Length: 138
Image 1 (tube, helix red, strand yellow):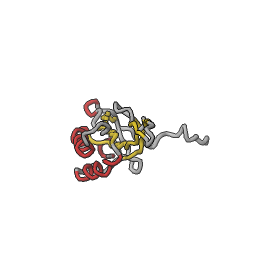
Image 2 (spheres, rainbow, N blue to C red):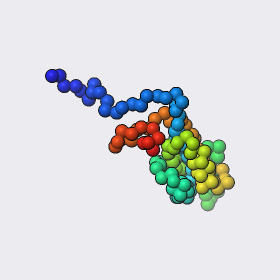
Image 3 (cartoon, rainbow, N blue to C red):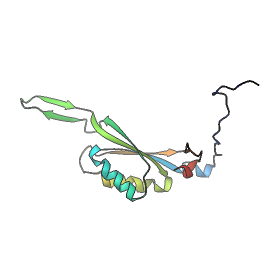
């Protein structure tokens, strides 16, 4: 009997059949916020029952295009890439607006540089440990 290589082995993951009525039943929310607002946002999300998330330290710039500092001797220097934090979480479609509202309320300072939130459709999620798919894997 011929051994199969790892690349030709059949997958053990059972892919769900796509139901056209249930496409995009989940949303991925990516929020770029000020690092000093992270704990406040995490606490607000946890209080509302949204505990699963990933956090990544990033640098970036938006419409503010960085910050200009003036030194003691009057010299100026620009820091055009500012430290931010990116939160990523996947939620049921019905919860997306609520999660965005929670993040906005907890992260907002009212100043330029508060961040942005991106919402994208998610076709499927698979829990690695159990092989569960879709909302059951959240």
